[in-house]
Image (cartoon, rainbow, N blue to C red):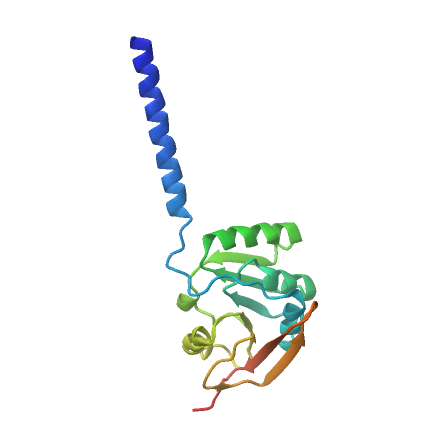
Amino acid sequence: MFKVKCMLIKTLSLSGLLFLAVTASDTARRPQRTPDIHYVPTPHEVVEIMLRLADVQEDDVVYDLGSGDGRIVIAAAKKAGVRAYGYEIDPEMVDKSIQNVKEAGVEDLVTIEEKDIFELDLSEASVITLYLLPDLNVRLIPQLEKLKPGSRIVSHEFNMAGVEPDVKATVRREGGGQSTVYLWTTPLRKTN
């Protein structure tokens, strides 16, 4: 009887520890705050046009705000050999993008961080890439205005109300459909 009680206590203790481990793991995987949007991947052909429009060169520093699976920073590193940083609030997407960076073999050039993009200092970037909703782009304007002159901001699909783009391009996607890509150069040209 004593053996049965000891085994039962051990089992309950292990179950409690397992529950605590699972609970701690679940808590650790929650975003800092609710993400503003859900991840939708930028098609690869659109990524290519975004990097071309921004004229990404080896001496640039690319920041992708809301970097999702890391495809833009990976492409920038592979194509131009640039230092590229992906900032993402969703910890699951951070894990996925870190894995994608490893698989692409660009760990020496690409850094992925779990951060809130509205709290970032963007001043070291020379190229910013975005695939955010228009109101989120507008919220970023105060940070974008602090970029060095000549820095480029390129957005997939959504503009920035109150700021005149330098270029607005249409990209025809494989399999049909099209996307719009916007490019701005700092200092930003405000329209109102």
